[in-house]
Length: 318
Image 1 (cartoon, rainbow, N blue to C red):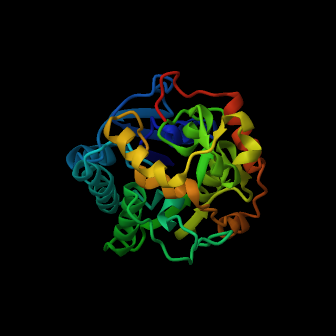
Image 2: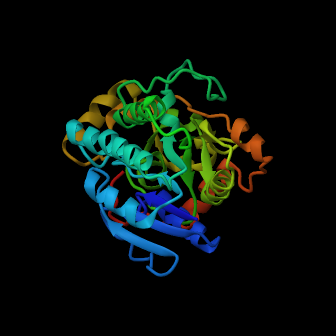
Image 3: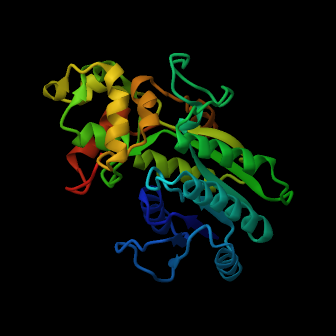
C-alpha cells in the first residue's frame, strides 16, 4: 500500500509522514521544499513538485502508483496575491483530483478541508455538525476550502474513486511550528484584546489527529464529509496568562489589522478577525462515533503541551 501526501513538508504532512512510516506504510511526499528531518529510503520518497505542475504530478503518480492520496498542500495565508492564491489552492487541488482520477491505482482521495469553511458569526451554535450550511464570508482561506470541496464532489470521477473531505479544527502539539495562525497569536503576540478572555477555541492534539487519520486510511467504506476535531474546547482566559490582556476597543482593531497586513508586519488575513471574535466549534461525533474513538487529550491539554514545546521560529510573525 502506497500513500501519496501533498504538502508533505508542512505541519500536517510532517506529523502524518512520521506516523505512517512508523506504522509500516510506504509514503511518497510532494512539496515545493524538502523537510530536512525526512530521510528518503525504502519507506519514503520525496519529490520537489508544485501541485500546479500537472505534468509532473502525472509522472509521479504513474511512477509511484499510490493507492491513497492525502491532499494537505495549501498556501495558508502565505500568498497575498488573490489570483495566485486561487491558482495554487483551487487550481492545484483540481490538478490533484484529476490526476488521482486518471490513475487507476488510486482508490481514495482524502482532502484536508477546514472548520473555517463554516464561517464565524453570532449565528454559530455550540457544536457545528456536517449538516450545517457553510459560509466562510470574505476569509479567503475558508472560501478556497469551500470551492475545493465543491469541486471535488461535483466533478465526474471513476466509480471506484472514493473522496473524503475532513473539516479539521486547529491541530496542535509538540511538533507545531506554524506562524500566521490563532495559535501563534495566542503564544507569541505580546498583548491580546481583553474581550478575547471569553473566546472559545478548539484544539486537537496531533496524536489524536494522526490516530484518527489511520482509522480512516484503514476504512475501505468511508466516503463523504466529516468533521475532524477534538471533543472539547478551551476558553482563552483559562489558557493565556492574565498579564497579556489590554483593553482595546474591537471597533478599532480591524483597521489596525489592515494597516499591519499591508505593511507586512502581520501575516494573518484581517478577514480572519471574525474567527477571533466568534467561536467555531465543530462536532466530531460523526467520525469519532464511527470508530468508537476515545480522545487522549482535551483541548486545553493540547494547547498546554504546544506552549511547553514551543517550536515556533524565534522571528516568526503572528
